[in-house]
Amino acid sequence: MSKAPTQMADRRHELLEDMVKQITLALTEFEVDKDVAEQCGCAVADHFATHWGGQIITIPKDHFHRLAERDLEVFHRFTGANHAALAREFDMSVRGIYRVLARVQRRDIDTRQGRLDLLAHTDTPQRDGPETPE
Image 1 (cartoon, rainbow, N blue to C red):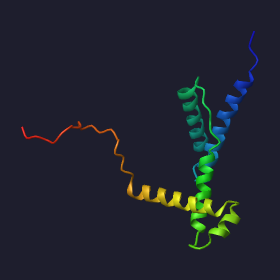
Image 2 (cartoon, one colour; image 1 turned 120 degrees about the horizontal axis):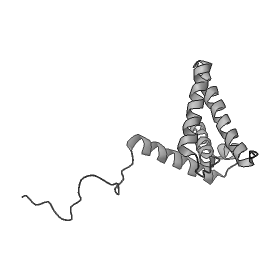
Image 3 (spheres, rainbow, N blue to C red; image 1 turned 90 degrees about the horizontal axis):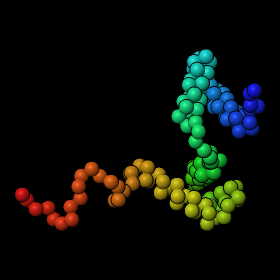
Image 4 (cartoon, helix red, strand yellow; image 1 turned 120 degrees about the vertical axis):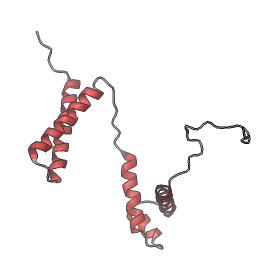
């Protein structure tokens, strides 16, 4: 007596099949041989099933990534004096456009210079007082 597939099993299968399909499609767009691309897709799906199988995973809809794309678009279209036009075009307030521009500029500076993390863990021991010669 065999069990009928559950809705959850169907969803898992659908996820892995979609993963294989999307990886195959992406690799063939980069001119990878279709058979090789499909083998790569299957290998990645197999890895995920083996490595992550049994876990409960929630995949976000990636709202922040979409906002980042919009922010970059606003930044690239900014001419220096078109705040109001961008606000109308992107259905935002002028103040919102200023915030987006500041956020993108801050990210750009952080990326170019690297952020100084004063609380980062280091392998060197921290000393409480001035260093004394031994």
